[in-house]
Length: 141
Ligand SMILES: O=C(O)CCC(=O)C(=O)O
Ligand SMILES: [Fe+2]
Image: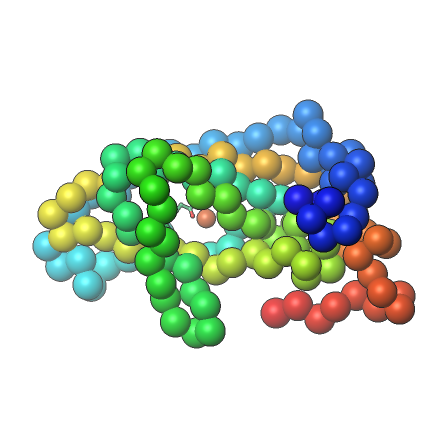
């Protein structure tokens, strides 16, 4: 990923290699009033990168783009890769931490598993020098 944006891979590897991971398993029961409830409220992930698996093929993950919510039509058993806030800041906004949420299905239960990649402990999270032009961090929203 670093290479793709013209940065040295070692800079990100040094921060994320062999660091703790977190795992969350999400269970969303069906609800007949699905339009009146929310499975997981809108948020961004605070970590560097998240790998997400929709275990039983029910697609209820949505991302926000230009103020509108869109379903993520992932392939079955594919891993969804989410950028987290830490990577957005380190990359000075080159990578975007996308706001997402999980809605509820009216008659199907849903299970997802998220694996969070955290940076090394005591890291001061600020844009890495190689992502900063003219000594200025980008303003990211
Ligand atoms: O269940 C999902 O699809 C989303 C899970 C998620 O965003 C999270 O656990 O942070
Ligand atoms: Fe999330």
